[in-house]
Length: 139
Image 1: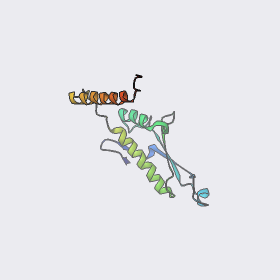
Image 2: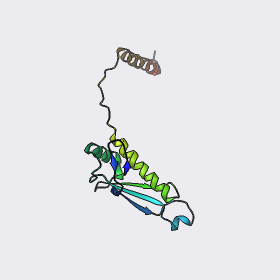
Image 3: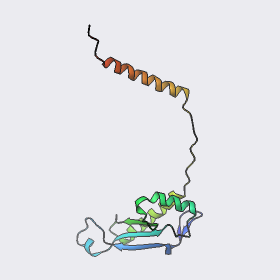
Image 4: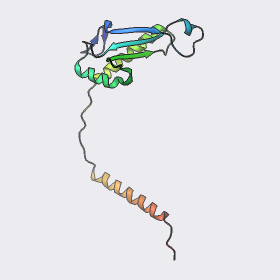
């Protein structure tokens, strides 16, 4: 079981991990050892996620989400398979936690009288500056 918060835990069987060869520098070892991790999590069919979390997670995932509703997280920052695996899992948990947070509704406010006056005074000052740039009339 993977703990997300008080109300959500994921079953480890919902996550699929594939180990692939990492790109970038690393010498001969990078050509032999599959240390990069591609973690797959089926957002659409997961029984662990409430509906509102599922919708927000799909919106937050962006291009990491496939057309089938599968979230793919790639981790190849470390040269160790275990550390890349832990990194990918931590990123998944963090993404789900951020999807759990509900946005505070915006309360409509009006600008204060003082802010309106400051804005108008700034516009007047700017107008005066521009007026002084104009060529002097021919006399």
